[in-house]
Length: 147
Image 1: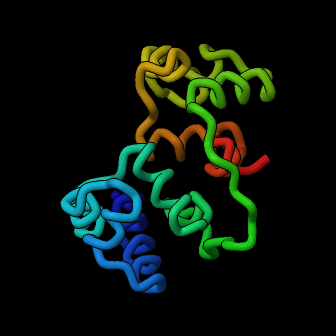
Image 2: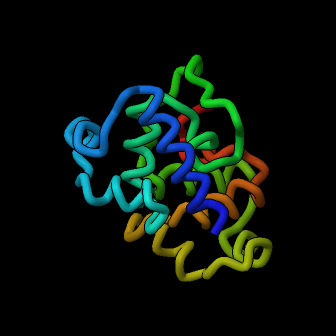
């Protein structure tokens, strides 16, 4: 999976640049050391909350961390991401697209949309990519980190 290798590469690059070890990073952002090690080994992708914690800690673009851009964009003032359900609901209204219309365009599960809109679950990183591509927005914008 391409996204897995990109997150792995970018995380290793950021950790090296900031002279962080899995242990020190884990202590800084309250993610287990074993989870960080799994991300670095390319065994697992971070959950959305862990992904946001990493992007916030390194003050880099989510688009960079996920592999969509080659520049970390440190100079941008990133905002704390609102709850995904709230942001997703606002974005659907802004883009004037229904849940059903988005389901048809993406092929993603209608049930997942319901769960995301009700705040029961959050999308996996691969679904974020599908949503950002379909809605023609950056991942940072999709998550509400930039306006």
